[in-house]
Length: 61
Image (cartoon, rainbow, N blue to C red; front, top):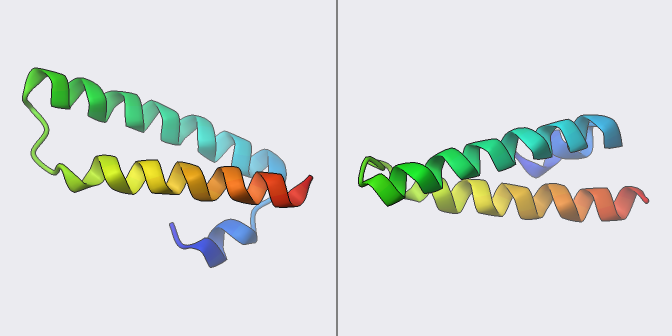
């Protein structure tokens, strides 16, 4: 999701999105550990999006 779209969300929506991203990150790590991860760039994308959401939550406080 782009930064512009994330900025439009409320703090509660960002927190919910962050939970989903953490779940996705966990699933990707498990796929990597078992050798099933085909799209290795997805882990990096999720990690960066988690950082973006955390940055926006800090700004909204």
